[in-house]
Amino acid sequence: QKEVEQDPGPLSVPEGAIVSLNCTYSNSAFQYFMWYRQYSRKGPELLMYTYSSGNKEDGRFTAQVDKSSKYISLFIRDSQPSDSATYLCAMTSPVDYKLSFGAGTTVTVRA
Amino acid sequence: DVKVTQSSRYLVKRTGEKVFLECVQDMDHENMFWYRQDPGLGLRLIYFSYDVKMKEKGDIPEGYSVSREKKERFSLILESASTNQTSMYLCASSFLSGAGGEQYFGPGTRLTVT
Image (cartoon, rainbow over all chains, first blue to last red; front, side, top):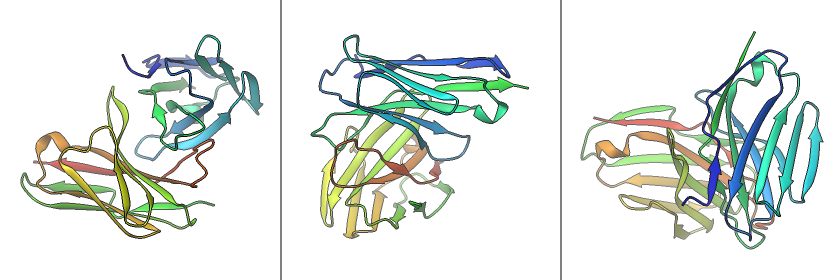
């Protein structure tokens, strides 16, 4: 079993829809959670970072962490065609500088 | 702005060739990483380095080696390229603190071994 499982997708949504992306994990030592966005033929870029259970908002993006269920989510409100990308969840523990990644979910927002 | 650069965007090599992939970061980060990314498998860690001349194996080190002679530069070496090493290779760097561990990525090198 992988340490991090991510809903595989792909997802195709109309412009303006809410996009919901999810990851589960098995390692209870994970305390820091990240979402990366990767455009086609580019490297991943950090989108959201959180270390506590609950919600964190940044513009149209909300990261949600439920440590008791070992479950994290990313929501994109009012999705735009420019949000079309692959989204990767990543996580780590306080004593490890290696990240564990999900396999990624490819999202297409149709104009 | 953190900048991580990789020496090539696209490379085509023949089976058995020795291949060098170079990565340079300009933010004085202690940690540097090499990943490969394959469809459905996500990012898999090949090697990482937490200091000059220091290295540790990641999850899939077989067939690869690394070199870090200067803090800003981390090289990945394929001693004898094989077709199953055709992949996207990503370099990343981060601060030593570890807490949070957010990594900054380069643009990637798409390597094809024929």
